[in-house]
Image (cartoon, rainbow, N blue to C red):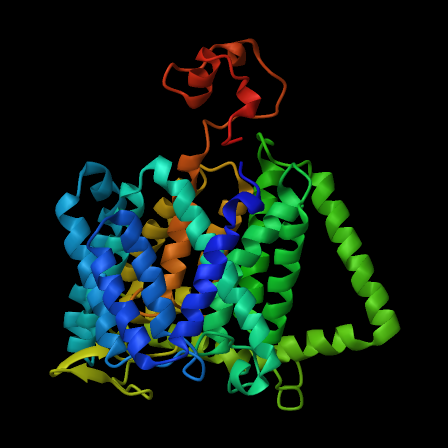
Length: 482
């Protein structure tokens, strides 16, 4: 298990900061970066993952800070196309075992959209984006060698924390930093986008502080505190919910499961949580600001319009979820068409390139009702299968930080349904979800801290990294993966 300091490169952080400053200088820089991402995606799986992350950050950057590149929507899709061209011809059996549920879901959604969608062409475009985007991400990660994965971890974690940290610094210029509802949007184009990006990193850091055995480093504590504060300032309740659920689900899995190497006793989580509650209680009693901040976050600035949380929930996501459920009841088997509203309208408009639709944004919050509305019982059942198989792979890792990141990526879809939109900001969700899902490859075989049984003292397999080090006389507890 590597410490946070080993997953952060200060040299890379400086490079990323300089690159972001350059993007603020001219639209030509953004176009050059996206062009470079197209070329990088053709090199190999590691570069494909990096290109998809960078391209999405550039395309969905804050337009007041990062100058929009000409035709950046088209360039973003060319990055995805380049990744597909590079990766699909190299498919092997292990890739097919990963992607077949997604392919089955995509085929079912295409079929139901042909039957029921009021905007068939747009539905098929979005199905194709889902098919290509998820296929590219899963194959890319599956082709990353274990020896390369640690470096990719460091690269992605450093990039993520750099973007989050610089987003916090934009508060020095509120006119640039704040979105339409007064929430922090930082380097991204809206507060919800920044929240979706931050939530997995917040869950990762908090799980490290609460649930991992070694003493939390100052860096880890500061990361957790910083991201938590920025989530509150963003007013992205989805992010707060996602990070909280990520930690709570992993904590509950730890309660009902055996403690494994690197995992803390439950008393540590109770102690840290108790200390945090004590500090908040003191601040609430002495300043009176804690309840005001919590109320503003919960109501998202709608105090006075909503009299209670039920009304606030209905005004934001609850009303939409109820409407989606009612639409599902009208067409329970096949739904109303993938990625569209039942009336076929697109309030944000449709973007065309040479007569081909490349973007038609919609806003749906609660994933379970959204997929039932769009794909009916058939789509809902197949999506459940996709998520279950992804969870099975993610739980191979005994490092609870990555499990928490994985769950947070799923949980944010309770407020922002991005899981089915890898052609947009949903790419953040899939890249970080897959990072967590494949991180088990950097760890040795799971070892429990339960009382040792006689058979547990048997020598490890010859190809196991610990066995290899024993052959050269190095103690197993010095293995860098532990």
